[in-house]
Length: 258
Image 1 (spheres, rainbow, N blue to C red):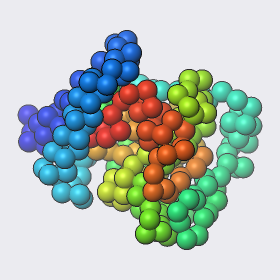
Image 2: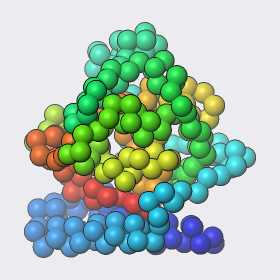
Image 3: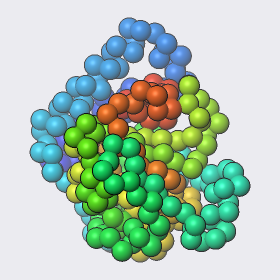
Image 4: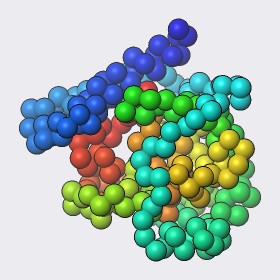
């Protein structure tokens, strides 16, 4: 077992253990203040430990193309409901736009062609799902840092929030639409990309077409799919359920480092 793999497993234990508790039907425990405090402490420990062991620019392991998984399971939604997404899909996403706004100097609305004209990165990495499976895929997209530098973050920006087209129909004070977020350390990490390609082809619908987030040092639920908007903010207050992510609103850890 390689040293990198050992560190990734060690760093992921607290996140996987806590999240698995919710997946197994124990989400009611999130209402228990003592349990919630323990989980918050575990999340802080995971984040602190990973940031201490790995430099901010340390890369997740990348694999040769020969290691790409023949089957890559779908995580989360496989096809968003709603007429709007269906219309965009039927038009080949020609009318789709990624809005980048919030605490930025120059808000933008970018087409898929605009994104493909920006500098790109291709990486073959392993996707680790909180449900216990993993798969290796090849991803191509524009580094998130390139987009953020293009709009220019204001000094008050602390987080980047990703708003998505898939509606899970559940809510704790939000719209029910999927969303996720990163701090600026992970937002500017070289392997954090807005991916429009998978395994040498356009991103399939089941894997988030036309655009998804890849943040290779965190678990799969952080890899938001069907992106519509990227928002720079100083706080999660007032954004959906206020915890920084759809599953986080239901008790998952916000920091899902592996």
